[in-house]
Every structure is written in structure tokens, then in C-alpha cells.
Length: 112
Length: 116
Image (cartoon, rainbow over all chains, first blue to last red):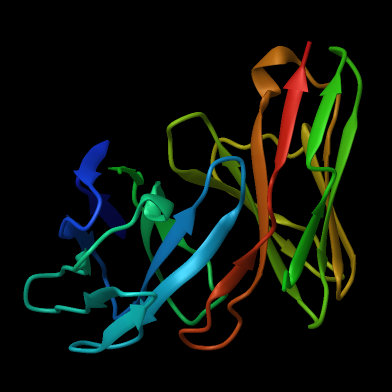
């Protein structure tokens, strides 16, 4: 079946460091891929998305490229801020119904 | 602004009581809504798909009689945890949208349920 695997956390970085959170997926079809962010005590917010191979999603300095050949959708940011501290979820869905399949989440902690 | 509203944000109640959680889409109609459960430090587990005007579709292992879902209108779905026990304590999150290809779901802010 379909699944999403993320690198384990927590990830601890200093402010202005480069961030990479790895995400790989297994899919029987051609899903859309998403990154969601969850701040403490809150629901999820969409960070970025990509709907087909080689698409790059970007938002708030974060980027991720849909790599079909490596079945990956790694999240990157060139310079993290303390305010980026949160849990990041990689997810996939198909057009039928929009049900999301989530990775296990990666906690990011950015220190000043 | 928020496009999906979830209420209440926090509930503390005694074992044996039933708790209702509401999920509303604020500026769009949602024929489908989703209910997730999240344990501390873990990912979201899809519990069920709520379908407007018809029965919900539950994921394997989720008790239908325990978690009652009603989707009576295009903007409201409710999850009722019946006869709640301490093991039902969790963070429950709803989402709506995502009906088109690649369209993202919008999530509510979640409900922290604590059963004493």
C-alpha cells in the first residue's frame, strides 16, 4: 500500500542553519505531495505542495521538489529561524477523496 | 483566516460521558470531511471519512459505535466519542476540502480531549 517515511527527529539546529528534512514515499499511482506544519497545540497548516513529477513547491523560504525517480520530496530551507520550530509532516494524496497519508512527522527545534 | 473551525478546542470530562466535537467549513461547502486522531509525538491517524448525507467510512480498527460521525450539512460534521474512557484521551483533528486534484485539505485547530 501507499506510505510515507520521514527522517526521525527531533532535529535541532542553530538559527540561520540550513535545513533538510527527508521524505520518501511509496505509491501505487501518481499522488500529489504535501508538507504540512504543526505548531504546538495547533492543527496542521499547509506549507507547500507539488502535484506532479519535477514540480517544486515553495513557501516562506521552504522548498521541496517532487522527485519521481527517487520517490522523494525532501523539505529544505536555506536559513531557519526560531519561529520555524514545529513538527513537519510529509503527506500524499490522490484526487479521489483527498484522503491524506502522513509520514510520522519530524520535530524541528531551532535555537537562537 | 481559518477556513475550518473546530470546537471545542479543549475538553476535560469524566469517564463514561459522551463528548461531541464539531467541525465546520467556514467559506466553502464540504461534501467530505476527515477525522484524525493524534497521539503525543506521533503522526495523524485517519479515523474516518465523513460523507454529507450518507454514512461515514471508517478505517480498519476504528469502532463505529464508539466514534459516531454525523455530516448533516455541507458545512458541518460532528464526531461524538461515546462513553469515553481514559484511553480515548487524545488530540482529534478534522479537515475538509481536497476534493479536487491536488487541492489541499484545510485543518481545524484540533480538540484536546482529556478523560479523567
